[in-house]
Amino acid sequence: MGTPMNNPYGIPAQPFEPPAWQEYAICRQSDPERWFPEKGGSTKVIKKICNSCPVQYECLEYALDNGEAFGVWGGLSEQERRLLRRRTRHSVDVEARRAHVARLTAAGLDSEQIATELRMTARQVLRDRAALKKQAS
Ligand code: SF4
Image (cartoon, rainbow, N blue to C red):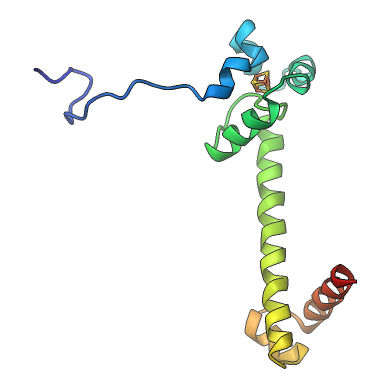
């Protein structure tokens, strides 16, 4: 059996299997181009449709997981998804930092020592400790 012309590496082509949730996507019944408006174009109507879509969550998760950089997915524009990714990353960073602060506090280090260890200011350490205390209460 010969190798197809568009497959120079000889790797058998895998048929594209769309995710199962796409079967329930409202946008399947519409012109997909509408979800990829021109720069500066309105996304208001599209987002409204997305907000009533039964697979909105799955769609957004897919777009975030796959770094979809264009169009409206799960009711969010590319700019909104970028922002969401940044915020999520930031909150994960804060949680991880506070976990370190808690661990080092439990180990008996003072705020200056923790600040040096984690390359932050003593003031930030105190703020994180206050936040941790509040969470615990
Ligand atoms: S949320 Fe919007 S883009 Fe995603 S599947 Fe539903 S209608 Fe399509």
